[in-house]
Amino acid sequence: MAANLYSHQASNVQKTWLLMAIFLVLVIALGWVISYVFGEPLILWVAVAFSIVMNVFSYWYSDKLVVKLTGAVPAPDEQYPDLHNVVENLVITAGLPKPKIYIINDSAPNALATGRDPNHAAVAVTTGLLAILNRTELEGVIAHELSHIGNRDILISTVAVVLAGFVSILADIFLRSRWYGGGHGDRRNNAGAVLVIAGLVLAILAPIFATLIQFAISRRREFLADASGALLTRYPEGLASALEKIAAVGQPMRRASQATAHLFIANPFAGRGFSLTHLFMTHPPVEARVRALRQS
Image (cartoon, rainbow, N blue to C red; front, side):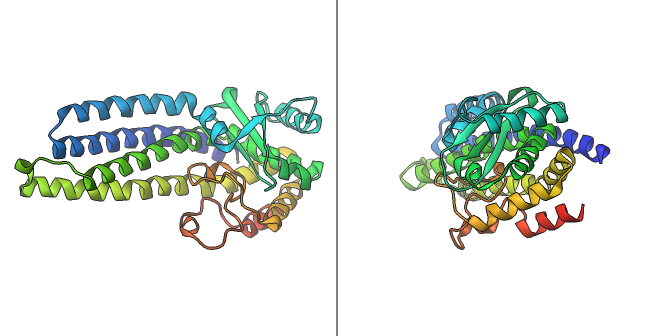
């Protein structure tokens, strides 16, 4: 198990650099196509600068952005003593620094971990989660989130929030600029037409690629975090019971976002019925996770 965890940690670091490199290339490619279509070389240089700045931002500040996007606020120790006590006991067992603790005012039960490394990590839980779980179940959920921190899952997951979001924004900007005017007549030749078509295809596919990246990141890591969390508490039933309670509520979060969905312990869109978000689910079925925990 230890070997698997170490290899998973190393793999996550490599995936993070690969994701940042893909983002760099994709943004520069989009910038080059746009600059060619509009005959403005400056656009390419802006795209290069933007891609570099966004990679730096995604590494250093993405956790703060995640906190803002989810509406999380700091959880005072005096107001949530049991939550702090659970976290403190588990970080001692796990050999991790205590992360910042946040509360999300939402009746839908859920939780997440974010940050770039164990020394700059945060855990957030919803008020709905605290309302339905007993202490043993809460320990299972917190252990799961701390496992994401220990497994270095939070680095690539948090970076993906920013990069995937900006890929979608850039693609949307390109599509709008193309439809609402642009492009010089002297460039409407065969080569220019091929580039325009390639640019449009790239812009359309970019958000899908970003979602697929999140999809690939999340599913296996949830099973591993479940297993690691169960080892941390030495009581798999606690997390299994918590997952069942969360699934039974089946309530979507008020600020559910496709960009941050993969960070949560459970699908934040639960209960909304079928939609396009179900085609790119970032979480394995709860039944499969519970079955794996009870067979461990």
